[in-house]
Amino acid sequence: MSAAPRDRWLRVALGTVTLLAGGLWVAGVGGPLLGAVMIPFVLLCPGLAWSRHLSDDLGEVVGFGIAISVSLAAVVGQVMALVRWWSPGTGFVVLAAATALGAGIPRRPEPEGAEGARQEA
Image (cartoon, rainbow, N blue to C red; front, side):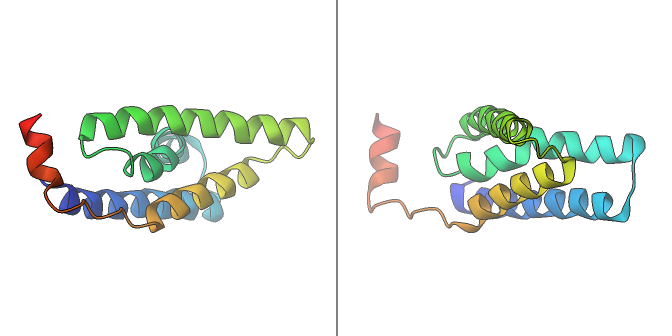
């Protein structure tokens, strides 16, 4: 699959998971269902939204995405704890905003001839 269709598919998946997680949280759904949606959201969505700009290789995008997501979740949680404003809802809103921002920025088009040069290397 080339980069453009995969990027479109990834953006749709990110939006779907983010909206599903937000909808369940707003509806007050708890327990295993919320955990089954919220944990993958926190561990994947914010980072995948940004890492898709770094590489065309799906493995690299996922690897970088997990690292970025875990780091961002830790920073958001730490900042909220240090300013004594701990709230899971606020943390979700910050991570959802980071996801929306990263997914909303279009990828740069590849320069002419870049694909052929990459395959030769």
